[in-house]
Length: 387
Image (cartoon, rainbow, N blue to C red; front, side):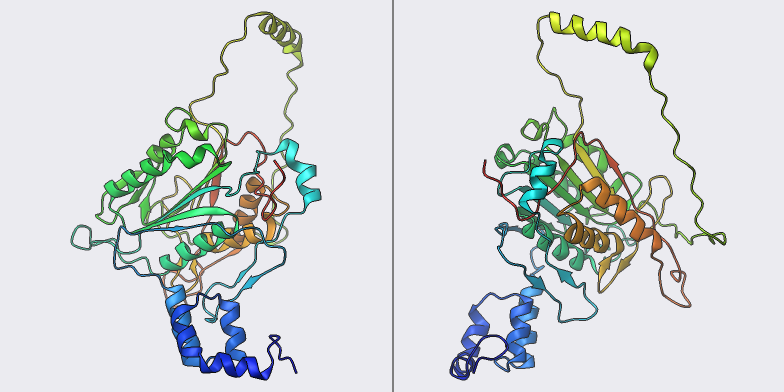
């Protein structure tokens, strides 16, 4: 008689006899471990040992690079669940349908390559207290980096994870990443920066600062020609100061919002514009020029200019990365990135800290994003059209 996992008694006994060898050699996911544990193939201690090795990568080499190839599109749904109730619960990225792709592709950035692109996750968790005593360990930062790694692997990106770098090492890593030849063949690029920070900069593990404007410059149309006209996504999980956002009391009744203004039509210049367009067509065509910087979208955990701290849970990771991960997994099959980041803002707006008796109790955070995208950026997850 088949068990819940589709095994008969003979197969279950065989797995149990060889469980010690399997524990050492096989690579598993969370759901399989739970299934084997439920069928008493693995003991609780065995399951805990496997998950510990699987979910906690070694941090012994601070400049270690881990390259994770993308997952290919699946024909059926999968689900990853955490054995620890305090850790983030992750559901599979919802797949885009062929019908949705066909209905949106004309107004969207091309997203046909497989892998979709390269994703750099640069995560600083442990800092040299001898150089800057104010930079404490970012507990929960390991959760963020693993959440992002899994997310972008499932979205069919090749993920490069670098940990605990000095400011100079971060500069070198980012410059090398921006010049990788693979960008020529892929349709997109992602950069995730996780560290302590202040307005306009993030910290290296040596307490030195890396300016974010320099990071964006490295990927502009002049310095990174392989990514011209391709969307570049940046996600910055860092404070922009150390002040706590204590929030304000909302007035009774529904939220008050201003009506959007009506943009006045520039009718008076239409005739002049038409004449110029005709003149331009009659002239010899020149090489198409691009602005210095375009086709970028960047999500920030906190608001610019408010010097506020970003909230981070030591078990679940930061608020911003939690909400970003959830929104992309649940909405990217039918929502473009600008709207996804609006939804992230809405979720962050509703969150508040729970730490009775401390300064963090009922504290607030507000994320934001900037964009120079020129088309809709759909990730079209798990769908690879015929080129």
